[in-house]
Image (cartoon, rainbow, N blue to C red):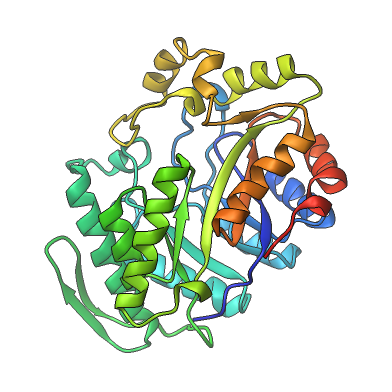
Length: 333
């Protein structure tokens, strides 16, 4: 496994909102403005029809590797539904072979919005967790370069071998929101990822992740701890709030979303989203000093990589503003 760099502010490329050609341009711009990495969402559907896009992220990732020098990966992809774990292992190994030390495989248990399309029964959360960790086992076995057969409770694999392999496998970073899965992530994966929660919950999740890592004989201090933060930045507080409500209504939905199947359902729920629903979920402010303090808080909690998603369409102005007033003022320990 390649050693993950420490102290990264990254750009979150949201495939729900932008055409992939636009996102490639914004990502190159992010690199020019001092961002060190990019996290790309993997969606088959946008959250709402008005977000308007949902390209195939795996085609795009190779373009990022070829046109930038950024660290890059998925945030996140789900094994066991649209993708068999063997296909994700092959894709991840290929990208790491082409761009050594730069790719990470960010995975999670998945959401019905994207995964129900294959027409299979959509399982409860506990079963999705079982599928996730079986998939991790399969992917890591395939990264070993030998012929692999696997017959798990959920995942089946017959006589598979990866012939194109990197010098060292890419890290597997797991997005998780529960204590049991966080501990299993520390034990069986290479890094922890969160999309944000209360300080109390994040502290608990990190502690369980570290416990699992130590139980497996690993040093959690050397493992990536990743967080994605949603912000709404604009020239005024009113504009920042208006764009959050219009462009990212799902950010104001304070309930589990993994079982909701269709963008049209999210659009119906969006009619009930109000500005107050973004409190402690999306930072909505034109004050870049508040953005610095917000990001610094998570750095101080121990996160080694912070990926920022500005929910508005004003990506160029956002990147320039962060380059001037946010990146130079962050302190990485």
